[in-house]
Image 1 (cartoon, each protein chain N blue to C red):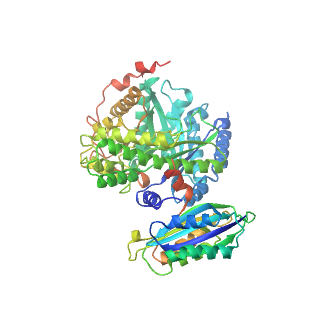
Image 2: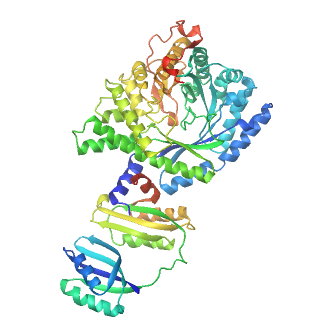
Length: 183
Length: 457
């Protein structure tokens, strides 16, 4: 048995999840995890499935595309192996928020700093509606900061760059949000 | 995944509404420092506090940075010095005060509390020496805070102690006349003092507490005010029950933050976590005022009719929110109404909305009492003692904590301004009826008996 990840992109409409899950089921796949989101009008779905039939990844992709592409869905299938737990780095969860005027390359600027400090982004929500109203341009990064990272330097680097970009940045441990909201 | 709206709401609380951890207070038990030699006692005290508190300030700063929440004040409270230094006279007590001041400077905490005596039932030799030493100790030190518990629901009011404290306050004011009687801002007279207050000037480590403990004081008048404003903007027809619910929920959130940070500081120091004190304690900053909450509730000003009812609701909602959020809420937990530390309350006094009589009435439902109230410098010892006795009676009869932090400002009269600086702010000196009178009631001494409901066993 092997695991695959099926990625589906489409214009959003009712019935996408039903079509995809039925197609995977018909090919002998058992869904392990599903995550979907909507950005503006676009549907994006990730489906991890365990295959119970002897079927190559290429063959599965071809069959799913044959079923789903006529309905406007782009499908990509990739194999996934067992998770590598040996390289797991002890880390602490933080939440970074940025507000400020819109301009090109904001995500690239912030993520470059995070990457330099070996910080892993686990979730990113970014809304850019344009203009200078901070409420309309917002980035929320949920990140894992390795315990070996110098958080003071990371914060300083982020704050310096944010100031240059006229962004208001907040860097806070995730526990602060969890302790307040999860009572 | 945390919802965006939750993140943004909490960020608003942290960034725009003056939410901070007002104080982390390290309680240090000094009983194992006791010696029959004053020099050895002082050396033991300096060594023990120095060791335990060496990392307190940098640790609080680091944890504050991690959570994006500033720990504004880092403080120390100690066992009541009147018992620790009981064999020594006033001179020895002053020496201990200097030791506490020195070690507070060394570990960089802003205040050390516990220059304290518990005399609700009687004045022992050490208590007598401490009270005698108070004026000099407070005038000669910068960071030492003192408190004397003169009354309790179980024991009644020790009127001899009340009169002694009145003399001590007048003397302390005179010794710091050039600073508008600043020494008195570091001195509280209490009824039913709790053992675990993290706020000054009342903080001391009770005899029933651990060897060392971390108590946290979280404040948030700005957060509560903004929460009320937002709720009323969304629904202008909210009734007071709905508003109380809004305050309660806000208080619960604030308490959670305090507990989170307090537990982490305690854990890193390797000592037990004590309590979160959720008191709405203002600062002299616009937007961080308890007084402004009254205006959000629809009153013209704090002090106008309805203020006592509003404060009762506010205090209760804060306690209920705190009790839900933490199993270890302690200290005072409620609303402080200090005159000088709250811009809005200071203004209410200067405009005549708030009189000392109305303040006293409000203290029957608030957390503390007559707090940071500047009064005319020529207020007689007897009148001062009468004000203290009245406040103690409210605490005694209602089985609650009350306190007096009164400052008879030397050379100044009602309507003048007193400036204390920093967090202590400034205040318009409040009018006291018959300030110079010398009635004999308080000089009769003895103990006002405890009320009948003290017989609970």
